[in-house]
Amino acid sequence: MDYDILDRIESRLEATGLTARQASIQSGNSADLIRNWQRTRLDGKPFPGKLSKLVELAPVLGVTTEWLLGQDFPARSVAVAGKVGAGATVHLVDDHAKGDGLYHIACPPQIEPSGMVAVEIEGTSMEPVYQPGDILLYTRPALGVPTEALNRICIAEDSEGRAWVKQVKTGTAKGLFNLLSANPTGQNLLDVHLRWAAPVRLHLPAEFVRRV
Image 1 (cartoon, rainbow, N blue to C red):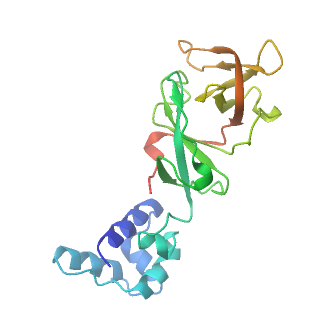
Image 2: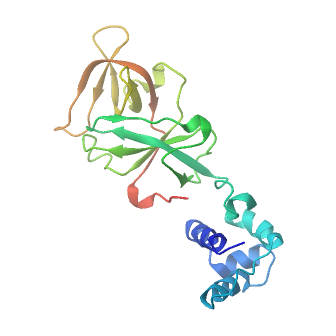
Image 3: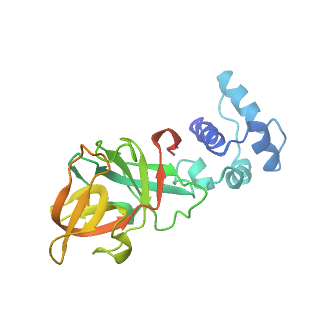
């Protein structure tokens, strides 16, 4: 085992707000468990951690033992499947079914990660509601535009595979939709064929996004 494990432990301490002392005690170990590992790293000595200690620490940090060992993602994480255009033209790389993506973020405590997908905003047409770099979370239908998506801000994919974050309105004919920007200077897309649309469930400003 190496100090990448300690790096992951420290990343989870930051994400959970726990101190090294608190996590050590809550895992049933001495208060100095993690601090001793940190001191050993500073001394240039081999990582002294034991698997049994990682097994005890993992649930306190909200992850699996496999993740601490670098073999899995945190238990409560969401894949950022790609980017969506808020004025920019973006093709979504939607790999959430495989659990892949551009990167993973810590799942906010108010929602369950199961079935949840995240995307990063690119472009400015939804300012001031959303900013470039913000994260939007949603649950995606297989295909189609459900009734609940109408008149709401949604993640949507058009017939050419471009992904957008826009307010979805009905168009001038059946099967056509208008995609409206929040920014008065942003581009509105009228009478667009959509493959699917999903209402935004949660918005995370860029400064509150924690990558894992």
